[in-house]
Image (cartoon, rainbow, N blue to C red; front, side, top):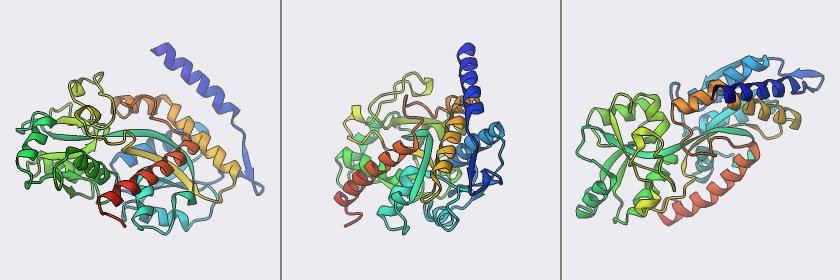
Length: 337
């Protein structure tokens, strides 16, 4: 393992020294501090992803970054700020890719997914449903059976902001269960800490959150939560605390396996292609650094093998796919016309 990491670092070193110097309009890029706009509050997965990639890559490649947290509008306040800046590569947007799609679908922004150039995605966080370890709910089938016996009783589930990727996950889960009106009642919270606190405090029995976010907060290590189901087509039996936890497909809930909280970096469309290409290489450098790889492994943010990294082009392809699928789902459920 040490030999593999050492070889990977050697290849990365060769890649770093081979990167060309970008000169645009007679000026070397970057020649000043790069602003990373994080459209959520500090302390969550977006914060960790931005710092994990850009701080570390900046140190390796010799440039400085500053982080600007601009929560609001389910990531759209930050997007508006980015679009108000020059298209020069010095203002970079970091967000859940799905929030960008949903912002366009629900009309929370005048911009579309086509108004950005995407630099890459370094993480795919798997959606899951959890409960406290001391709750009466031992497995997801028990919850579903109870819901079918009491179809008018909707069970509150703590999650992120309304009409974001968490709600899409719960909408599709409710639809798959086959109970009129669904199984769960969506209860949104503006911050990760608040929704965790309301579950751990016994106010709500269920939590919708990524496995990695729960692991990063020590929920498994401290035996605070029990994961009932993870989204996707495969179990994650190689992770001790997910041993025996079913995936949505095997319990008969047809949720598209791509639903999850994947994060992407982007710049305003019109940024010079040479600068876009350079910034894409920076994201790949940050992703390949031992620091980020160790963080992915430590916080269980890479349980879906092969989906942790996407190129800028792959990000746009995925956004277009999500736009089509989410629009279809939301129309079927009456959320949009």
